[in-house]
Each structure stands twice: as C-alpha cells, then as structure tokens.
Length: 374
Image 1 (tube, helix red, strand yellow):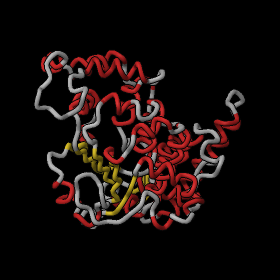
Image 2 (image 1 turned 30 degrees about the horizontal axis):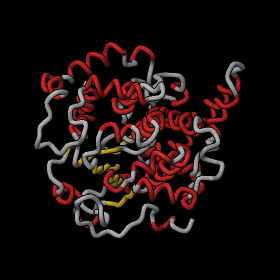
Image 3 (image 1 turned 30 degrees about the vertical axis):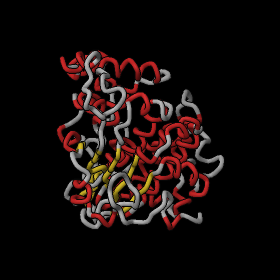
Image 4 (image 1 turned 180 degrees about the horizontal axis):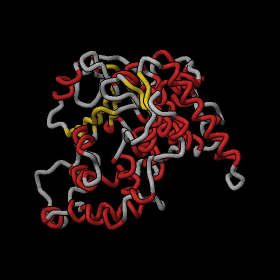
C-alpha cells in the first residue's frame, strides 16, 4: 500500500464547511439562468408548444415553487451537493493499492471501518446511533445472497482509477462512510419488515423501474419511464414504501457485475412532464434523499444520463445546477433530440417492451427474474 491507510482516517472528509455552496452563489446561478426570454415567457407562450402547461415558468418562479413545496428542504442546494461531485475526489495522501490485490484492499478497508467504529464508541457525547451505523444493520446484502465482504468489494471496485490499475482505499472509505450514514438515517424503515423483492414488488410496479444490460456498451441500463407512471397513485403512496422500493432496486444495481465493472447508464423518458406535477409526485425531501443515494452514495459510476421528451423547465433547472457541475459531469447529461438515438447507442435488444416510444423486444418485469420468487 502506498502510505498507511489508517493514517488518513480523519483526513479530507468529502465535504468541509468552507466548500459548501452559499445562498449568494445559488442566487447568482438563478439570475444567470434567467434570460429575457424567460421573463417574457410569463406573458407570452408559444401557441405551437406541446412542452407542458407550465411552459411559462421562469427560473425564479421555479425556485419559489420548490421552496413552497419543499417542506423545509432546500432542493436546489441538496441537488447541487449531489450532482457537483458524484464520483468523489482523489485527495493528496490517499492510500492506494494495486487493483490485483483485492484481498489486501478489503482487509485495509475493514481496518478503517473498525477504527472508525472504535473511535465513535469512545466519544461520550456521541449518541449510540452514530456508532451503530458501522454495524450496517440496515444493509440488505443478505437479501441478494451477498456478504458484507461483497459490499466492501463493491466500494473498492468503485474506487478504482480510470485505468483500473489501482484502488484508492481512502476514497472507498469516504464513500462507504457516506453510505453508512445514509442507510443508518433510515431508522427501522428498511428492516421492519426486512427488505426483500416480495415486500417491494407492488411499489416497484408503480414506479416502473426496469434494468437490462447493453450488449453494445456493456453497461447496466436503468430505465425510468415517466409516461408509464400514474402520479396520482404515487402521491398517495407512503414515503416509506417508495423509499424501500428505490433502496431495494438500487442495491440490485449496486451488486450487478455489469454495473460494478462498466458502470451504469440512466435512460429516462420525461414524457414532457409539467414542473408542478413532477415536484408533487413524491415528497421533495424524499426525492432529494433518493437522488443522494443513487448518485452520491452508492458505489456505482453513472456514465451517462439520457433524457428524452424533456420539458422546457429541465433546461432551466440544468442551467442552475450547471453552474456548480464539473465539465466531466456536464458531459454526462445528454438531452436526446430523437428516440432513435437510444437504439443507435445502446442497441435494440436491451430495450424493454412497451418502453416509451421505442419498439423494445426485451420482456422483463420490474423485479428481475432471479429475484421474482424471493
């Protein structure tokens, strides 16, 4: 190992206060996203537009609506935190090891976890739940036939360099700590009852999440079709049911070998959904919580976001977030001009039947076949 991994346990926490986005920076980004066209849109809407019933929404109006419906959640700030650095950072002094020494890397990561657990337990002012997070009691790995070692391996694979020659153990630990905290914050929601495919099947059907592997790109593809979702039904769902469904599906992705080796592609049919319909389909706090899980916590590298049938408000929202995104992250957000781009890029054999306007041939359910009876 280059450097002793244990020496860097308290070094370079992934977010420090001085790096947090300020309200002034957000206000500047909102102002920059507001054009003359936006201001005039409130009184003039194209008669030929089929975007949505809120085509006239301005950047400032969007932010006001998010505050109104956010139940105290600063959606813009939370989204910036999630999307600004989803891959984490390589920091000076990080401990690295050759990628072909996975067993040694796993042992080093275990030592970091144990040291963190011991340190938290010694702090008298800390609550028991802080140390409890290192027990990973809410992790559903057993439901997928996995062990805790498999979970650690997922984080180590995620922390490999671009060339996959080295593993950044310190970086893997920082991500693992974020995961441990996020999972622990769910309380008993994921364990009472235990998280299983059968317990989330109905919720998965409502949210219409599906996955497949592209033979062309080798990536796992997460398909999300807004056109197949009844938002009136999702509004009536309990936040816990939605949370459990997304967590189960996210872990299915996390343990999938294609996602671990090649990363994930997200393909979403936005179906020209209106802004107000979108922000009220689930509690805003839950939405930002799930974004944090899938993009900023799980050890899965999202290589590309393909968005289809995007309404105008997404352009405005992306302008705001774009002020805080890295060039690399911006390059991953792709607004498709035509449906054919998906088949041309991913290949037709991985497209689910009935998905959007595509003529998919893959017959898959929302619960992957290997877990359909579990």
